[in-house]
Length: 156
Length: 295
Image (tube, rainbow over all chains, first blue to last red; front, side, top):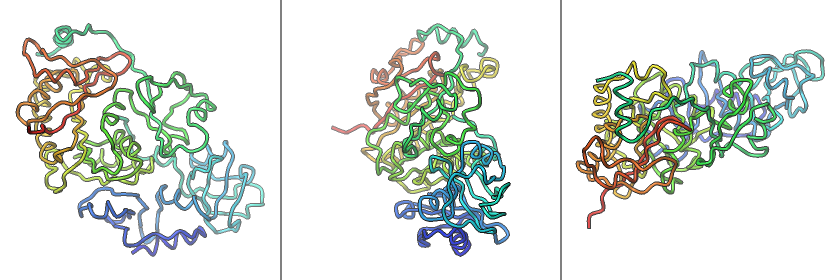
């Protein structure tokens, strides 16, 4: 059931492994539970535990929770400066000049997590050019600005 | 029975003189997501000036900001939530939340659910309910943004919780209510006493169901953002008499609730409830209830 999730995690060169026994699926969305929640959850739940992501047309779209979990360990990741952080969460690609630190792959075609100076995961992108080259080097695939692009929230 | 003067006269009878209120925007920091540099320093660096809300542990008023505090990477990373000051009070009234099984009966859009998960340090479990699918999506987005891990959400009416076959240690009953003029400029034109009474009936049904699914030593926190006593003191008086619940002491911002409502004498323990008139915050009513212990 979690093959597409593991494939995505592996593609980021992360070593985290999710316990399949604790993953439940609702339509095309996956959730990671703990033992307590597993003992309580009923089939008709709307959301449960940690949202992991969804599969659409056989492609996995990770949640920001999963990306943050991966970012805590070994994985492809870059740390960006404040200006690039803002541009990235506005949906823009990452330029080499905005990258302060690189961990893991620098190779074209690989995925990499984007972190700010505080180590918070802002999303992920696809390396489109060698990270040592000038210009746009990481294509934005998904960023936390997505929370703003979803339906408007109103604080109660 | 409606109109601005009608309601203002009622407030005067309850001992409060009506005044215009300009509501201050507030945030609440999520302690489980804050490590390293303090969030107040980070926001100050961005030009957001905050003042600590004296009666809340994690609440801050926004004094000055050149941009929306709902569009920073700190907000999007779940380091804080935008939550009005009085709305931050109910979740803080429970005792000993860690590892508890908690029901958030009217949870969407999720500000208080996230706060509860924070106070529980993501331990135990929260069962969060609401009926509207769009509001449930907003709730789910909040849970994801704030890295909440201990919550199960159902599309279920708070009056039908029994179907889950769970007994709860703690229940937050932040019931749907008539609201108040501080958060809605058109409130006086929109609301009638009939609306208020209709809401009060719904709230009583929710109180009854909460009582059914509460463990014997459990706690209910009941709150509304309504200033109308039918939804506040009168409902609690009814719960004391019909559901055999008792009111517990709470220590929070607000005035003692009134035990004399429009000439009707209520149970004396009602004064342990807190009524918050609009001013520093919006209007609110909060109280904590437990099952009566038989002698």
